[in-house]
Image (cartoon, rainbow, N blue to C red; front, side, top):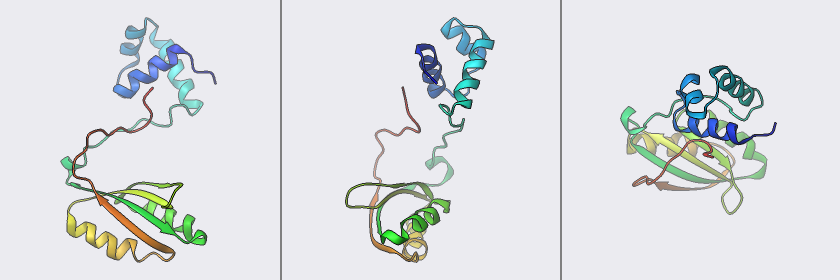
Length: 149
């Protein structure tokens, strides 16, 4: 699928406000509501738009401790460790990376007791992990979900 300038404008508007109506997008772009609906449907069908979701402020729901981990694994355990961590609700994201660390993950928990429990009882308990390094977030300057065009 070729993405044209109109598709890019639609994607930019939806990135800023995923709840923007077809009518409002149509007014902004000088198109019909039906044309906007069809374009969004096509972008979704082609996988350009993966899903519509809500971004929740973790502090407002009691998850005020944000930690980033670099985790090295034995090669034979990498996929199993990554999939196990990805299923954990405390893990916000988990990526296989190049460089000195095999996995990079972001964890959100309520407090430092919960973080300590996660590290000792859930992370260190996984076989195949050879090294763990953690970093606690002090202040966020920018955070964004997904790609912004």
